[in-house]
Amino acid sequence: MAQIIDGKKIAAEIRAELAKEIEELKKEGLHPGLAVILVGDDPASRVYVNNKKKACAEIGIYSREYALPKETTQEELLNLIGELNQDPQIHGILVQLPLPDHLDERQVLEAISPDKDVDGFHPVNVGRLATGQPCLKPCTPAGIIELIDRTGIELKGKEAVVVGRSNIVGKPVAFLLLARHATVTICHSRTARLDEVCRRADVLVAAVGRPEMVTGDWVKPGAVVIDVGINRVEKGLVGDVEFDTAKEKAGYITPVPGGVGPMTIAMLMKNTVEAARSLANR
Image (cartoon, rainbow, N blue to C red; front, side, top):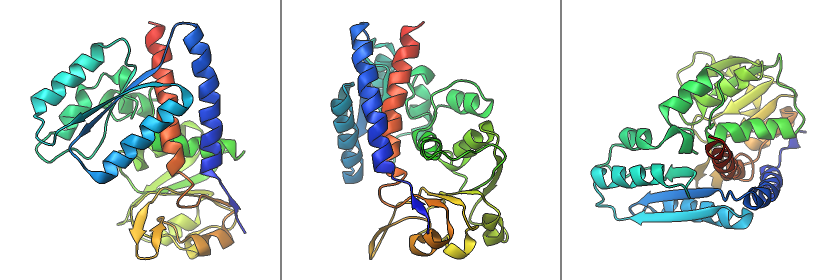
């Protein structure tokens, strides 16, 4: 029976560490600041933004929200980002996705200064990540590595399989695992004999967006299973891993909810503090 990796508990530990760090930074005259931009009235996006604001308030990050109407033009949005890039009170800029259809998501994300890109989506940060340079890392992949580290699991020499090739999770988590000397295979829904590939994994990261696609039969005995999926089905929220069968085989497993999810906002807070530090040191 697998040991459950408690993402809520680990995220709370990280927030407590950051709160102390922010207190020290404030004494030095540096108050980390995050700007969150929300365009339109998508209910799920509103929930995410509220959670981010709450996390900022809890640990002492200065936060500013820009709730823009759905009709906001590309030019208006880019002008706002340009102003925030120059604002000394703001160290991190986050544009909540998805954007309304008439806005060019790529152009918007590329307009954010790479030094304030706390989501880690800017091509400059992606390039730095791929080439092993210091950078602001995407929050969910960075959270996955923290979960593994804080559970005391050694990655060096392990075989890691990542199911999913998205720019937000699959590819960046593969780079982070490589940087920790794991041997990494990236798979996706079209990979031939996917079940066989998964069975080789000492560390299995499921981020494919298909409810309970990875069954216990795909899990190597004793493996570390990290489930990134959040899928709403009739019985409620489930991951990309069939939890009940996988936990019988795995050594460690993250639940859904309460596994990777809480880590994403904790790592966003960590990135904001890191960005504040590095901007102040220039």
